Length: 116
Image 1 (tube, rainbow, N blue to C red):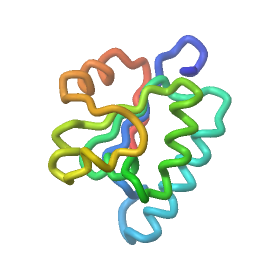
Image 2 (image 1 turned 30 degrees about the horizontal axis):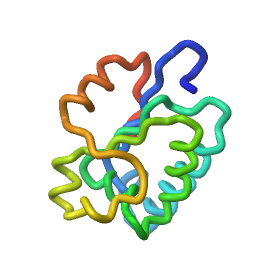
Image 3 (image 1 turned 90 degrees about the vertical axis):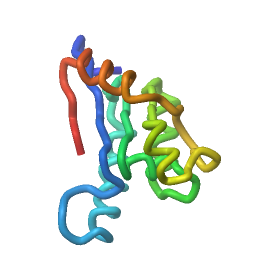
């Protein structure tokens, strides 16, 4: 877990990767998460906020990759305000609901933050 002795956090602030075409962005995000899930060194935490929380919801093609990360020990945290805003509380398939305090603390403790 992590990258050597460095504490790495992956921050997902969108359900798509990159800007432009949203369909392409969704395909790219799925491929990105699949690739991360099979790395030898995973991020310690995966933080999801804004539309990034939708990646943890039932029906998201990203759920299996997020579950694989969690099974390998990554802590998957979804912003509670965002989960409530998108009415996903009963639809989360992976991860736990956290709060902004926890997200900020995770970001400030990290040696490296990867935001996509």
